[in-house]
Image 1 (cartoon, one colour):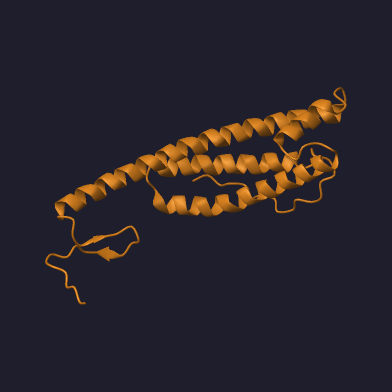
Image 2 (cartoon, rainbow, N blue to C red; image 1 turned 90 degrees about the horizontal axis):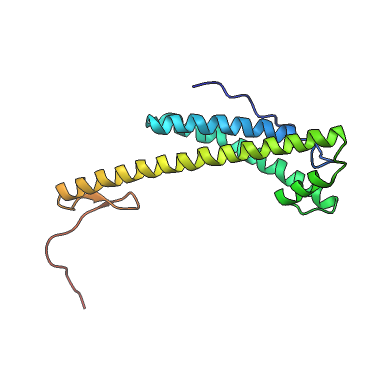
Length: 171
């Protein structure tokens, strides 16, 4: 499994909505790498790796959320919608010929492309998970039929048995 760069925990204060873009891009690259690792683990049914990858994804997603929230606050402070649509409007209306703005527009476009890539990998991973679940359910159904439906585990993980005989009514 390839090494994943550490996520930078120092987020800092954002004055401009573009201030967080380099950090957001870094986090997005880390997330994409983790999603690709997750996909490989799903394909090979490597459950142990899946657990480790999930543990590593959680702080990356949290950091991305925090960075987006700060960017949204900066947008709102400038009178724009606190959303991706507001960011797009801010990028499009700010000093279009200014080099710093061109960099911000390019960084934003790159971040959107990374988000689309992550979304697609995540969609495929969801399909792989669904395939594993369906295969496991089929195997469980075969076991149920072969065992006559008794002495099996219920949805709560507890053993369930189907009693044979008559119930006792006390009244």
